[in-house]
Length: 331
Image 1 (tube, one colour):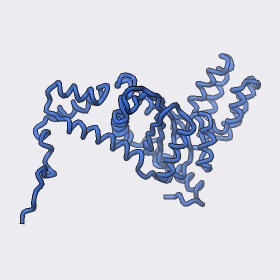
Image 2 (cartoon, rainbow, N blue to C red; image 1 turned 135 degrees about the vertical axis):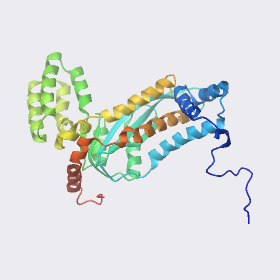
Image 3 (tube, one colour; image 1 turned 60 degrees about the vertical axis):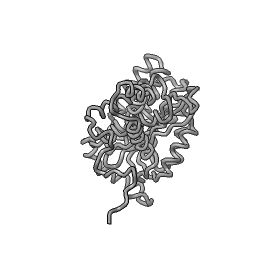
Image 4 (cartoon, helix red, strand yellow; image 1 turned 135 degrees about the horizontal axis):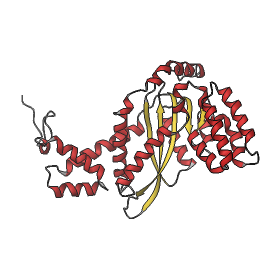
């Protein structure tokens, strides 16, 4: 007996009616126009004015695909074990829901490196206001709720209070403060002569054969710098957190010593913000662009694992198993 078909029934293997004979170039044009326009509304108007055979429903489908991609990325279960967690924040501007006022928001970027060297975007969470410790608490709580537990090393900058927060949430992890930010601050807070001394020593410190050797060189550096300087006192207090990356194989130290990986995401966010005219015109517009950004990375060049990392992956897994052998975190 033939089944009753609803009025809108269409076999799954057929494309939507308005796309059936649509050249593929039009589809690329639609995506490019969405990304290049200041807002979703302006892209919709441009397509309508061009008289292309692309209706509003299809435009909404394209947008929804990437918005959903980001939502899934921010809510899917996470692996309980990671080699590294990399944190950074990016201040953005966005229109509020009423569309009348542009306010500052902060996107909290959380990236992960698996024990096998796979790069992952764990979350791109956006909250109203400037970067804050409360924003970081919300972000890290979300990651924990999604299953994140055992980490070898957590990498972030020295945002006030963040070191204490990550140390308390991940007590068995090494906490690494970004060495790129360290060098920038050294240049800012030291005299030219003292900065030259710092730069020379730190080059040798990064090339140390061991963590212990790095600490000895760092102590020697501190003796060469003015002891009354507030910045130098801070270095002495947090030296272990600036050198934690030296506990790991040379092949992964560039990834473990700075937030550069997250800074790359921030640059892409800046590019998306500029394409919108300096601010995101809506939450949906922002999430669409973040979804495109994430998908291009995760399904593009981030799919390949660095060969240097692969060479020492077994050592990282051994370190992880030794550190968490009494915990219920092992794969």
